[in-house]
Amino acid sequence: MTVCLAYRVGEKVVLACDGRVTDESGAIVTDSAKKWLQCGRDVVLMAGKVGDFWAKAQHRPPSSYQAFRKRLSSAELDEFDWLSYQPDNGCLQQTDTIVSEPYCGIGSGASVALGALDAMQAAETIEEAQECLKTAILIAVRRNSSCGGVPTIISL
Image (cartoon, rainbow, N blue to C red; front, side, top):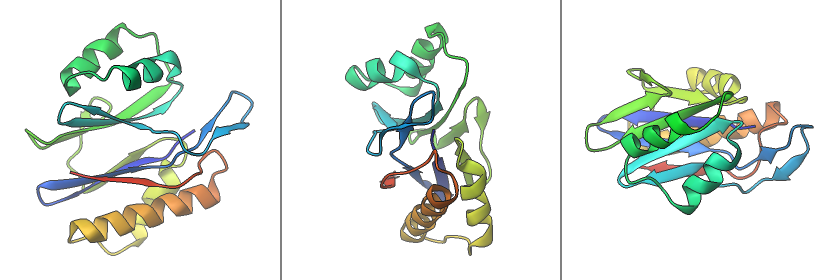
């Protein structure tokens, strides 16, 4: 399971995710998974049951978010979500919804992490957003055993 977050500060976005992957029984497979994908200049984070799709996408990344969506439409996945950021047009999306709020999240730990972000002072700089996301993910990791590992922070 997962916690993935995005935080917009002005024209910039910070993305973050944990590193834990669990199997169907809840047993930890790894705490150091790469849960983000560089698609040209675009970045996608995924949560849920992504099966072979994610491994194949990591091995041969799509060239853009649009190429990612095309591959996704032909995959047979039913329990997953994604966050994407397309810096060329400034579009931040949570699955198929364009996000206008300053932050959003997906995954089993997202509600805890978003609650933590709600309790924090709004970030005014990228550095503050990075710290907010790191803290929120660490809180989600502490409260949700399906989340874990070291947070990955990506600033765009």
